[in-house]
Image 1: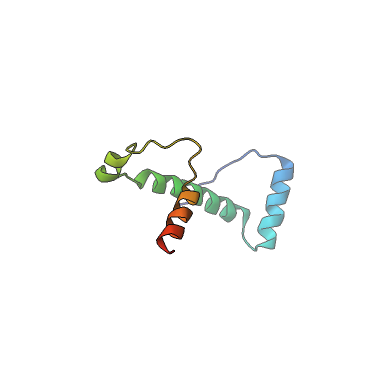
Image 2: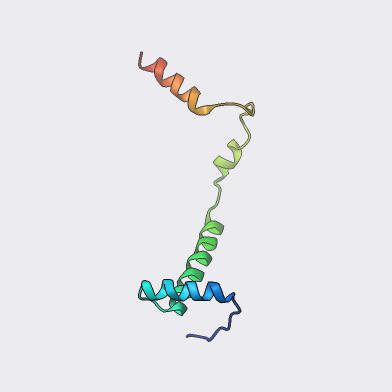
Length: 83
């Protein structure tokens, strides 16, 4: 089912959006619908991500200094391993 929606937008924004839609051969309505669909789907996906009990139990196990460089430490580890 499709429903009509009235929006109040800046004239400049509307004109740029119309030009964009025209150049991409899509209606302005379809472009806005696609945008709203994509951002609301992202929010739904973010809500569905759950942390397993194992991962939650491991959270906060290690207390590292603020200036800890994990990339350097890993690089040093690999250097030592493959000497």
